[in-house]
Amino acid sequence: MKSVYSHVFGSEFHHFLEHFNLIFMQCGYAGILTPFCMHILIVEDHETVAGNMKKFLELQQYIVSVAHDGKVGLELAMTQEIDLLILDINLPGMDGFALCSMLRDHGKTMPILMLTARSKQQEMIEGLNLGADDYLVKPFDLDVLLARVKALLRRQTVERSPVLQAQGLTLDTNLQELHKGKKRISLSPKEYGLLEFLMRHKGIVQDRTQLLQHVWGNSDALMFSNTVDVHVAFLRRKVGKSTIQTVPNKGYVIAAD
Image (cartoon, rainbow, N blue to C red; front, side, top):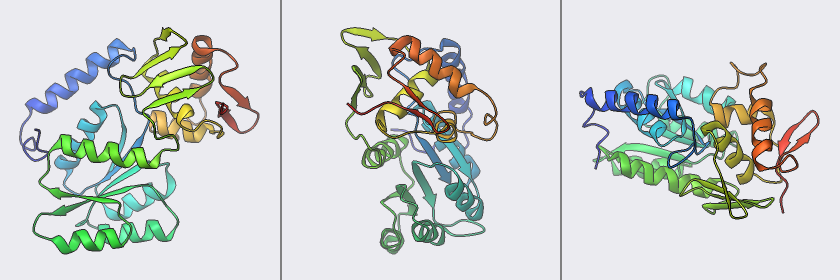
């Protein structure tokens, strides 16, 4: 079991993650490890703790953004496509209770996992009453964090099954394998992330901004590039041109069966 605090002052874990990510990026194929194409926002003022959570979740191939201030976290949560918010309570600028309440008041429905101190049971109750979906007591194990994250994301996604099916494709998100009939198809990490997101939201048109935020984690830097179109073209060569439809002036969609 890996405690998020046990690595605060250690460097070996950071070196391991950096080395592992380098190997993974050089590999470039979706095998055991592939993106879940889910965007997680961590709002935590302890920079090292937040950094360890970020690196651990990125190792699981989630897209992760971090804010160390409540006001910055609110701005990110209001303006970006966020699938899950990990929210500390004691924050500069704006505390976690106020941030949670404002998000719910503005109709934001992403799951919120609130971090609370072991001795403050009242914080758990108050956070849940304000709209948080779950809480995690500090200090906690990283694999417990991952289990909570997966459970909350399963509730959030349109398609909850770990096996996604559309247009003759079968995507097993546990094994992270794609099949078309009996044929297994290899994908690059970004191709996998793009396909999984479209399959989870089949029948719903996704514009380029949404795809960039969920799969690449940054829509601004790539907004005027043809990154999405290029990866859609690569995917079509592998899964069939008609599988991913273009909706003029709107985006891309995989039709519901």
